Each structure stands twice: as structure tokens, then as C-alpha cells.
Length: 169
Image (cartoon, rainbow, N blue to C red; front, side, top):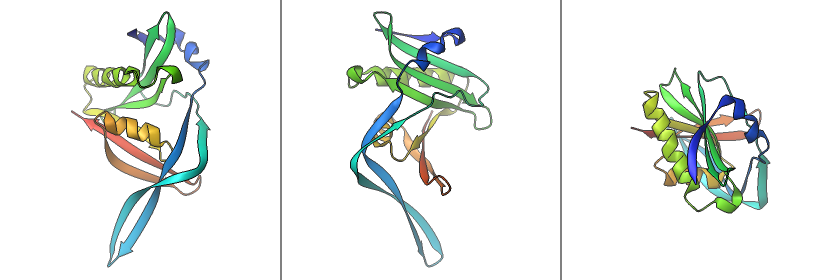
């Protein structure tokens, strides 16, 4: 098992991957207004049945895109797609994926380590990620890898909550 940077001409290889997450729990946003003060709480709730969301692997509008892959026997078993956000001076993780049969084997942890190496290489203050509040396994994974909650965005039009997580140096 080894990790390497995926060259741009090889990015097509990631398009063949079924990229999704499943969750049986999600975070709901609770707003409290009392005596002129506003507070927000994230409440962990259960889905009635397993929730599955298929995702797009979009490049986004960052200055630089960097993709690391972990391969085993010349087969991609995990990847992380990152970029540098000049405005925030932060590296952003746009996508991370580990093949289902390789989860819980430290592959994701190695990819996270590579994201921090990339962030240091580009001179970033740290790494951040935006995660759908319905992706409880993803949020839990980032929290276990030294990320902290740094923001919440509620999209009332699409009825979504996005949680911002960061790891600063």
C-alpha cells in the first residue's frame, strides 16, 4: 500500500468510483432566541431508515487542485481531493473516499495525514472541510482526526445544513 499524487491526466480514474455516503444518523440545527441572545445547537437524530447520498466529484474554483491516492496492487483504494483557498489561507478538502472493504484499516487516516502535509507545503494555516449534516460518519471521522467544529451554514432554499470543520496548525 502506498500513497502518491495523482497527475491531472489521471483524474479520469476517480470518475469510475461510486462516490457516496450512508448514514443512520444526522445533525439537526436547533435555534434558541432568549432575552435578545441567539444560540445554536446541533442535535444528533436518527434517520427512520438508512440514508444514502451519491456525490459528484467536482473540481471547484480553487487556485490549485491536488489529488492523492492510495494504491494497493495497482488499484486505487482511497483518494483525497484538496485545493488551496487563497482568501482563507487554508487548504480545503473537497472530497475523501476509501473503498468500502478497506475502511477501518487506517487508509483514511493516511489520507488525512497527506492533507496536512499538502497544507504545510502550500503555506496554509491549516485544513478545512465542509460536510453535510446528514453525513454523520464523515463528521465523526474528521472529529477523530483532530478537526473541530468551526461553523454552521443553513441553506433554507435547499433545506440543508453544512458543518464546517477545521484543523489549524
